[in-house]
Image (cartoon, rainbow, N blue to C red; front, side, top):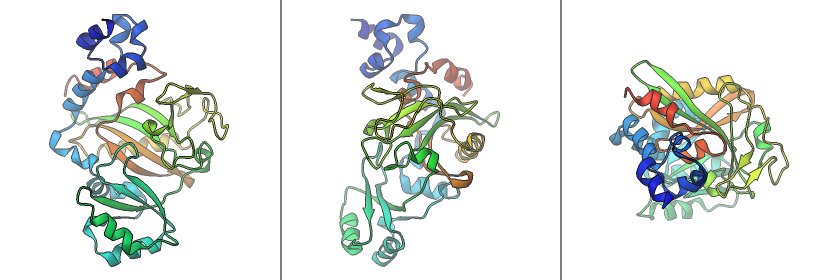
Length: 297
């Protein structure tokens, strides 16, 4: 019965209800959180429907944000066999990604030393239900790799771009770490998240996963999570500010950023539908902060 009220009044999904502890919060506490309904209010006010594909389709995103990518890639379905084979021979490891894949679904890590690239090409282009890109493997700064060396551990920074005042607001930042020796760090694929203080770049919460397990240290490597200082934090924020202004018709985006040696940055992707739960777990509700910005949109 209580959940039904939370659904009607706050627009909470059943996942929201348990993730945010609505069963122990009254109206005042519940109104602080972005729920499923409020998330759609944000997205509909900020993101032009016809342009959301610029984030969701990886080939379009890579072309639009090529100056932010920092890696080589090809659109498999739009190159010939010889170019694909040449690309495979160029790198010891490549990643094959389905252009509409999300949360790590449709991503394959391939070692090319003994690869029959011709067979792989034919397999990919014969899949009439999918469209693929191939990317070279990227590197990351050792301080972040040490959390989970089997994956690229990214920084998720969510921005809202106020085009009227030409101002980019960083709404939330989180470190995403892989787990269980998986090759991806996605939160909904057994990854671990932790909140980053926007001002300081210091992790100020424990780590947590989608099953609500909590971690003071990474369960595999033992590296302490809370208190870690994200390297080159001010430069990282400047990087996403530039990226956010690059696409003014999609103003709410969750950016997945890789930090490399020497303070270099690259984008993995931008998510116009960045999960609202990941931003708020083990910290605080962000609905009022979003409301104050988007009310004029």
